[in-house]
Image (tube, rainbow, N blue to C red; front, top):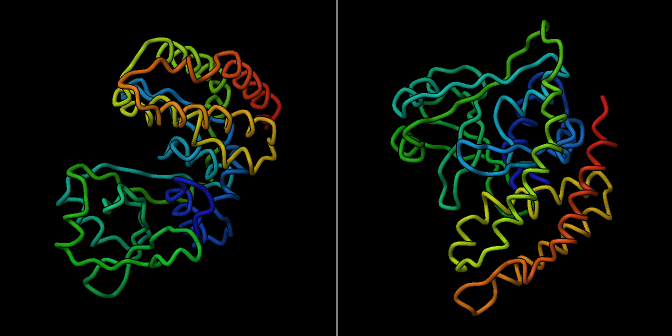
Length: 271
């Protein structure tokens, strides 16, 4: 059984579960280390958010791992009813986003002989969660988005290698990222305004990369990021109606931390 070993890793645990069908024994942690997930940043300008680590999901990112083994991730979008039909008629494992009470969760459809839909459920070991969920047609369609992205693994011996330019661009995104953080932190905002951008602006630096950097032994960088994370959390616990985040987050420490991160990217992203 494959279990989650870091925050937000449900899709990477799905990938580990799916690739096992082809004789490759990986965990989500193994995949993250091999593809150097800790050193990837991306600015999704369409949704106005900065992404890193396990926030980077889908073909573009999964292929950084899969292409090294002559596999690729194929994904397509379907309307909800068409998605249900595609899943029902598939004879291969499929990665699908399911809307649980706790939020969107990547799961793997496992073909079976029954009329029910059986899904592998990524979770932490010994957390009491079920390894598999089984849904009827009606139950499943209620858990799908109106537009559903469905993905699967395909063997392709003609693949030459992953898109390494994504690593080269990470430092540039990180430069832009720190500018946008400091610009936001320089202006007074209500606590509600800050919470609204917690995921899109702050999680990519202060949350998502930390467990991955721990895997890489980046002790100094992890300590630096945890200090900034603590300062940010303390700011959100203030009783004031509005605050200026630079009164709580030291911009010199932020810039120093980002410089350390950029150096770590240069040192470690070598293929």
